[in-house]
Image 1 (cartoon, helix red, strand yellow):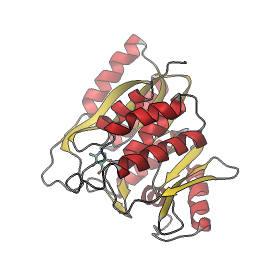
Image 2 (cartoon, protein in one colour; image 1 turned 60 degrees about the vertical axis):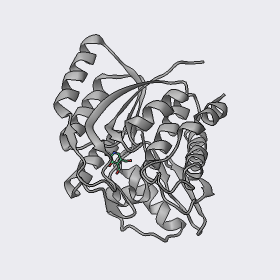
Image 3 (cartoon, protein in one colour; image 1 turned 90 degrees about the horizontal axis):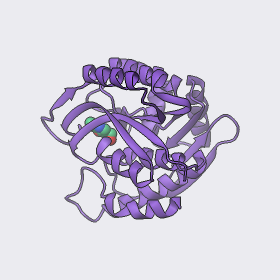
Image 4 (tube, helix red, strand yellow; image 1 turned 45 degrees about the horizontal axis):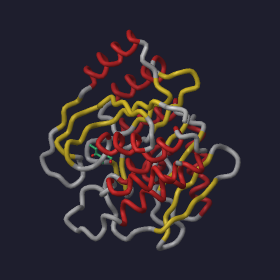
Length: 276
Ligand code: PXL
């Protein structure tokens, strides 16, 4: 097996099962070396916890990259998620330029919001920052809220295929080679993922679980990145990641006390099986 090395750039939320505490185990479970560049250190994620702490690590990120540049450390892919400032987008551009192997992949999950709203820490300037990052990416992985913010197309809860096609082509027009749009559902009990790179869009529908869970975007993006690194196509990786995410949600919904993330740990073995 070709052994790949991925760098994930996002925050450490010490409690809350999202970002790096999800990416590290999931991508590792895919059999891929997983390195981290933490963007910030938070006590919890920002959805549903009052009084969370947040340490911005921009200056430390610069020192870390400087050291990697001196050592000649390079990655097969860089996968970015939650960042906290425009300055961090510049740091990521530098990582794209100096720490990727030839032909290495730039994967950007433009984590900014959900259900039609920006996450509490962000404003409209931050949306412009994310646009610049998406423009440099090979693959972006937005949900519909993020897609609408990135394209200035109004957010809709109910829509038809034309709305999604418009979002997909406007997203590709920003600059990425491929778009993986999550949370696309045309009927009540269904959601799904669309993969688009110009030609015809690929769509994979899957069951929509009634209760929504935090951190599922990170779970999906991590399983997608890991699968891609194991040689799957973007379409195959999207299917594997969608099935994995649904299984994680199904394993969590019964537990009402577990509202802050998904119990992905017991599903990691299935992910490994799918990749064999
Ligand atoms: O799951 C996305 C995410 C990552 N990191 C932090 C967050 C969120 C979503 O709310 O708050 C800190």
